[in-house]
Length: 216
Image 1 (cartoon, rainbow, N blue to C red):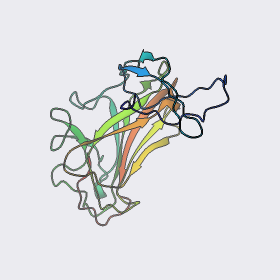
Image 2: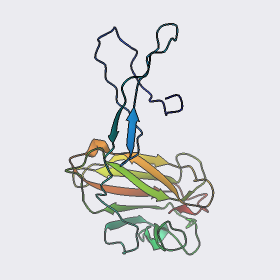
Image 3: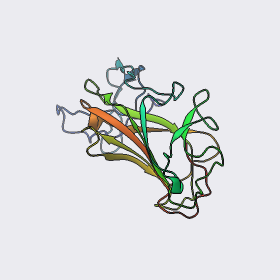
């Protein structure tokens, strides 16, 4: 018991016979756990260990997955790249987490110094969360910017009404450490039971200091 992981957020003990409940979070999926309780009195005398109960968490069900290796069919690309107005995002292979491919902006010169402000978005096909419980979004990315908020902003938004309105679930202008891709995991359980779309957006917001690699 003394070397087990302590649960957080437990209630203060009530009078004898009081029914109390607590929710334990941060557990791994598809994993067997054991639970037991000790109670401390007002001078930290500990009770004996309680009965031990155990349970197995549910496995994760993947509802949508794209490693960008099968082309861009799951995404609609939009945006403005410099004065020509071409779409910002496209599939590229200079930096990636899957075998060979990721979405990126300018993979020739590896910066956004076009002499104009640049912005772009990639919007997913509809994703079915109608039967989802405790949905989460996981993605891997690399970001190199001027590290000056609000410039060179990378954001993720979700729409549950066919793109009429969007709710931001992720926003950063801070460069990732090192040279590798990092994983971001976001709780999107608020969209359980809905049909959603994802939108990844990147915007320099100005035409200066854009000689950075940007968002992959």
